[in-house]
Image 1: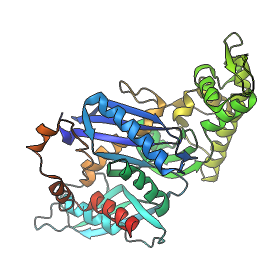
Image 2: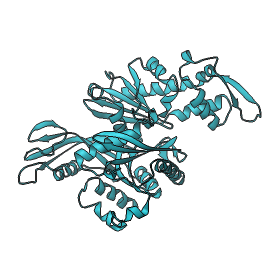
Image 3: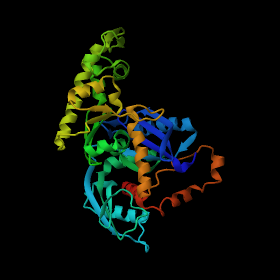
Image 4: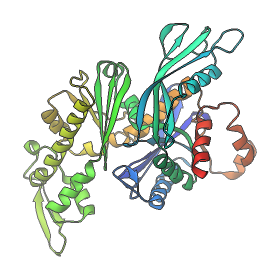
Length: 428
């Protein structure tokens, strides 16, 4: 496998950490390795225990490495949370080359120009997402490289986050022995896989129901207009089951995954199972229909909160409807309940790749697709994320470690300069 075509995504969630190794060939993605591990260091999407988070990252990375026999060095990291903020930005530069051809350096300069905004000292720029480039007044250009012009403009969205939350996340990745090749906003990344171009143009809500939080993002006119993170998710359903049938959280999670149903009308009274209760050596028998009476009210609450949040964002009618994704929507009946509660067209987004055909992997696949697109447009280098585990065969073609660090900076100031600033601020 050619290292330049390999990307590794790292999705750190409240309930689990997932690593996906993907190989991009001819514009199409092939998943070659997947690793996942339970996450115990996060609560409601925020890191509360760095050591536990590092342990989960290492476990997921090791699992993915064993599948492909490669050592992961760099990852594409997804970020999310209530601390994320978005605002419109724009930049203008003169094309620098004598022949007036627009090159990657010009895109780098206009991206930097768009970041010249007044940002509070406690916040950090995560990324600039171009909505369109304008060349000498010609609008709607997605990739201006190779075009001729004198004036290059960018209109886009600048994404910022709280320094504390970002640096804690970066610290976990660093302590796990990994480098960050690129940072992507999770809803944007998930949208590249979960949403069609027409849905983004018409107006659609992407609802990612995770373990500790639910992320709501609205796309319209081809771009993400707004996002919000609700501090409620699948863990609340698990807790309700634990309290309702008086059992441990682990047993409640197992019941939810194996026997749960989110829609009472379709739950079966004939499907029964035994549950070990706390404070008793005997097991009690329950039916799927009984468990559905615990699961449905909480899921209904989550969906109603989502609907209210979208209304607060200022969107009352979305022709594209609602797209559900995330690990918690894997509970049977969740899609049917959503259609009943939201009274709109609702579908579930599932990645169409062998080995990851579950909504829980939507963000991980999206991180790879989104980063690959940034490589094409902005010249970022998010690939070359793995190396052979055979050290003897690796030493001849590759430079020593110090050289490798030297290669990272000169060509492309973009992401590498941004990551350098992250760590510079963190260690000051």
